[in-house]
Amino acid sequence: MLPFKDLDPILHSQLRLAVISLLISVREAEFTFLKEKTGATAGNLSVQIGKLKDAGYIDVEKKFRDNYPLTICRITPKGTKAFHEYVKAIQQYINSSNK
Image 1 (cartoon, rainbow, N blue to C red):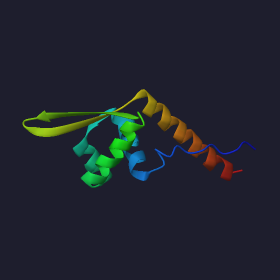
Image 2: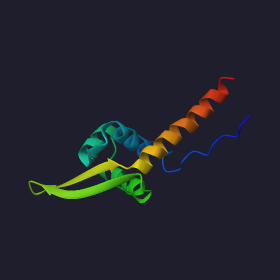
Image 3: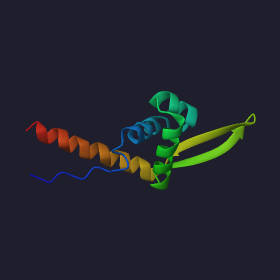
Image 4: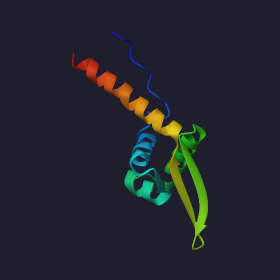
C-alpha cells in the first residue's frame, strides 16, 4: 500500500479551502463576494487571503471603484495546481478506506 500524501497545510484550513474552491470555479472574485459566500468575518477573511497570497496561490489587486476600496482575488496557476493536488490527496484517503 502506498503511503498517504501529506495534505497541503495552506489548503487544509476550512476558510482557505473555501476561498480556493470558489476561485477555481469563477477564476476571480471581489472580496465582498468571497465574504458573502464563505460567511467569514472581514478580518478573518483578510488574514486568510493574505496567507493564500503569500503562498502564491492567489493574486490580490486593490483599487477603488466610485471612491470605495475594491479588492479582487484571482487564482494563480500555482493555486490551481495546489488545489488539484489537494483534491487528489483527499481522494487517496477516501479510496483507501473503501478497500
